[in-house]
Image (cartoon, rainbow, N blue to C red; front, top):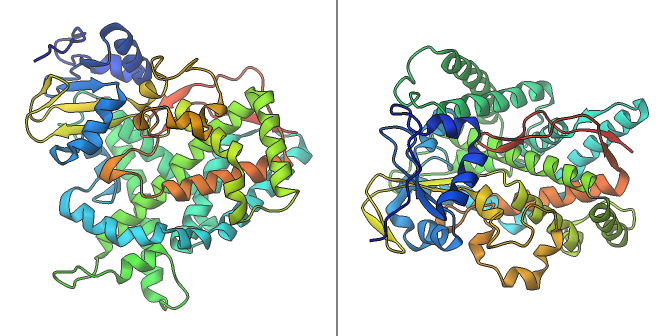
Length: 448
């Protein structure tokens, strides 16, 4: 067996957890540069972690031998907020839930959502017009979150959440922060019950979010099913093949909260980073706007236009390379295993830092630069499939990938068809790797 390089222990008790907590992105990238594409860095005396930074290893863990790997330790914390939904559940239960939800994301259903999405984007454009009229700067990350929350509510649950939209967004952001703090603490696995400030903050926001979600479920149960053709209705009507039982409210809550949070948080961050990159690269922005003019000719985009917006798609793919919302993927070995001569003991955490692989100099020329042209179809064919995996891979490939790509394509096309943006001076734009990769202080722009 090949020996796995080990990152020196920083502290006897916390091992390397504090270095990881200070700056996770730098932690993984610096160690890759020092120790190579495979290394061991234990985050606590109870947490053995092997890090894999090659596409071939990612493919093995997510596809070739996926049956030997469950979700990593971090998903245990995520489960506190999301419950046993599609993101966190495992085994036969996950497969059953996936089969129930999958039809909601088929192409014909997505086709029906184009109007829903463009209506929500029109509302965003009205807000931007107002900012422009007032000469007022705004945080584009916040506005993208408002947009994707609107779309998630209307597309997945046929609900208008305008009455409590700000509360929903606050809850999602606060739960994100709380869970990230738990993951970065060497002791949080053992004190989840203890009333620490972070645990109390988490429970407060979870209770508020649950109240909203249970209200959506209660209102739907009271309503007549006719006229609803959304995911919530599908989940309500689903029956267990063996027992014939329907989901109880707790199961419904887990699935609804998972899809609602995931459907808004990831796309909003990607759109915010895309606008930042385009505002920072005038030549790429003009190329995008030229395509939008030629394809749309001033009209609202329709489904047929999405396939024609090829450069817009490339901009999104390159944004997802540089700023992947799911910046890290983790699995835990169920049994002993071996990858390329490296022995992986049972219960080892196997970490695939998407951020690092997406910027790996062996895989990408000028990896730090913004070059959407990398995703021209002929160039894509020359790369390993897992050199770029923003939606994961294998059986747990993101169920909402087509939904997200359609949403982001429509949003960028409609926004840049009408507006331009100037980044505000003297702002500190920093990546914050929480559950998803966020701009820590937002991205402040002025509409032009």
